[in-house]
Image (cartoon, rainbow, N blue to C red):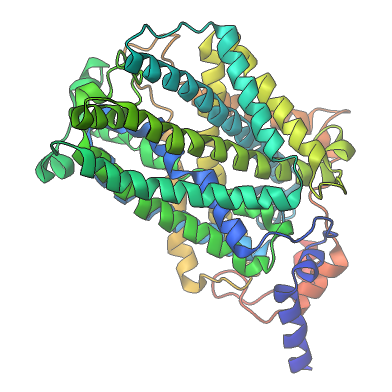
Length: 550
């Protein structure tokens, strides 16, 4: 009997579709994604090139080189703790629902429906606004490229109206959608290329920039210079405050770590591939990102010139360093402009493409579970492309709508963008907190197990999301005005309030119709009865009836 039980348990963790059925979900999507494919979508979604081109100037303004280097090291170590928790959960729950499903399974029966409803909507809005942020960055970098070319030609840079900027934004939205509409096999190859291209770009720039630079910053400057002049100009004089704001560079870089989760129902050997992809992405971001940051700092002619908003790059420090290095070496910035177009620009596009790939899977999963309106439409599967094509185009339409505020004031648009980072911090570490608290006796691990390390890692993850929630809600400039107001906490509170109200409102609230993720009680009971593995931290699994009655 024990041997048969062990064989059945092994089937549940080795057979992808059997594992999915044991979670109460009927497999629909093709398992065409290999472990390598999943790892590459994580590399592309996190995107070393996107993260550093977008936020390197933030670290230079708030703390300078010492924060850029050591902040990267410290935050990477903390995020690795979060990643280990996510890896364990992804090995146990191989569904496209990701953190929304994890919340449902770990919070306990009493609050499962409400908690998963709120987590689902927070995740959906965070992912869609994050995708909009990446596309907006792509549009802005397109204009930066035009301005750099104009400076190279010695002509005045063209003026772009808000309508033209929005048109560029929409064009890049559609370009990402086109890549996701060519069928599953093509989409997989493109995401593999995207991940490899980000790594290749980081290596090329890490080698080329110091080699081309005519002079280099000393090591004492790169590893020890603390810059406060720019922060003081923004009204921030407290050095601890300055350091905390400078951590936005590494913090934003590690968003996208969850992308592997949403491909779980299309990934081969998901119980192994998912945790590997998450951990590989975290390690690669640390190693390749640190190499690129050091390369930029050693090659940087001057900090002030790199972040000057009147420079050809408009204040994008990474782009300006590339421009200046080639200008000083060859007398022409053309080489730097070409590298900028080949690597950061293409890197941001592939990041946007990959983000749309997994955002569509989130919508597909939520449609299947009837969490969103028009659920049948979102949850449909296109048999020609072998992808959830309605969700792909629906996510694109939402991104286009999210960009409309840029036609008026940029404040409303930036509010949506700032929500993405702060919400994802909460969603990444929230299930880890549940794992060591109310979900400690409900959790049955997959192949990747943390064992006794789960508790300390969960505590670190919990403290990190609390720290992030506080720090990244702080103003970045004083005095605070309508133009520089950090609206992230207000937007986050509004989303939580609206989602809660939608659930509880009498008569028409979601409480009457939302039953949580797809769930098969019989299969779940069988999974519990088969396992003699630990459930939680050193606690044996409870009998199925006790769990189901909670």
